[in-house]
Amino acid sequence: MERINLIQHGELQKTTLIPGSKINGADLKDLFELSKEICQTNIYCGLAMNQIPLELIKQRSGYQSHCRIIFLRPEIYGGGESSVLEDTLIINPRIKVKNRETYLGFEGCGSVDFDQTLMLVRRPTDFKLSGLFYMSGMGLPKYEEVESKNLEYFNASQHEIDHLNGYTALNFPEKLVNPLEESEFIVDIEQLRQILEDGGGKSLYVYANDRLEKIPYQDIVRR
Ligand SMILES: [Zn+2]
View (spheres, rainbow, N blue to C red):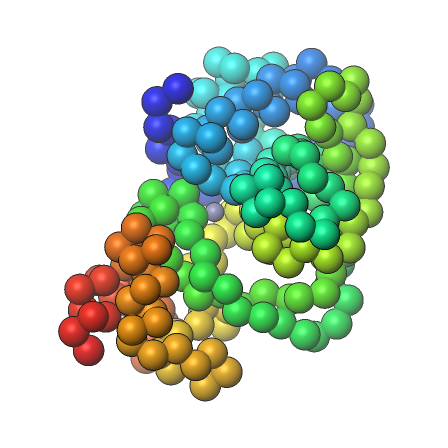
């Protein structure tokens, strides 16, 4: 498969809950295979179905519209303590945050500059993820509730559910943190340069003076 360009920030359509009567194993198998191919080709750890161009979904599955489904690939993180270790589609996913504790992590996104710009995002640490889980070989999906034990894996679920609601991290100034200004996240220029280099020499999105700003990699090095 050739690299697929995902639908970009500002053009993601909000999805609605899929009724139980519209869920069938054959369609899910198609979506599962398509999602896996895209994630493998583009090296993504997760995907929301409304990021995929609709024409491709129609070509490759029985779905005729964008549906409320995410795909996660835990193995890209090595599985860890997670109780779900396989590639998984989650239909009608929900997150219930359990307390106010948060953490900060760098994220890339196929819908933000085609994954060429990183963001430092604040997200809840402790939450429960639920929905209809579908894994390879299953006939029909099964309802599951999973605790956020493997931080990185479940972090992707929060990121993807934002997409199902029509958003990327750029829509949340309060969640998008400037690593050069956030006292809680002490990072010097050298560390930041290394993080961006590890991410392929990407730029960084921050909010400065209430405006979204993209800092090119070269500028971070120079400051
Ligand atoms: Zn994304």
